[in-house]
Length: 202
Image 1 (cartoon, rainbow, N blue to C red):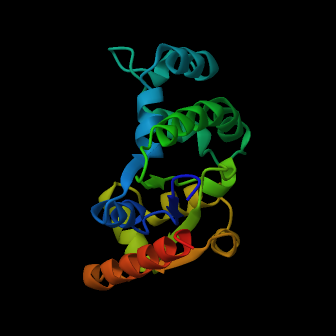
Image 2 (cartoon, rainbow, N blue to C red; image 1 turned 30 degrees about the vertical axis):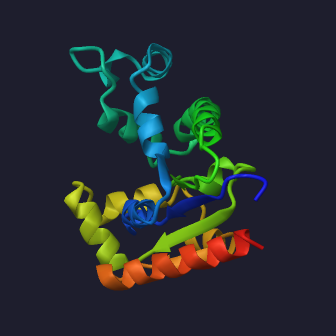
């Protein structure tokens, strides 16, 4: 192989992306989580100042930290996409730069698992070897979202800002249908892993 194998895991809201990424990690992958990169960025002065400049100081708590629910209320507003698009244009280059850096640190013989919820919306990086899309029945996804404190209307509202699932599936190399059976899910992930590694050795 001329470069490290990198599996990008994406999928529907509440489908179990983190679970699938964790199963790939258990098979030996080096896990890189885009959501953790975003969380780190939200703690930087540059991002805090830009967000407060855009939406006002009421998005900050008493310690000057960003209140994520307040930001979500603004970017997922039903009035339009202007705030979501502004934040995307501001954050995505910074997220991509950090992901590039972390993938670039993979050592010889290592392979990466990068969990990227907005893989296609943000543009697929050239270091992505395989694109894995995770989906699940709506009832299962809704139950997981309710555990986060979202009702069905909130889940639907957020999904409306993303590319349709069918389009993202069509752009993926593998689709994982997570029906909630952890044993079957593990078998599916292992099958994909074996197929990918066999192809990379050719």
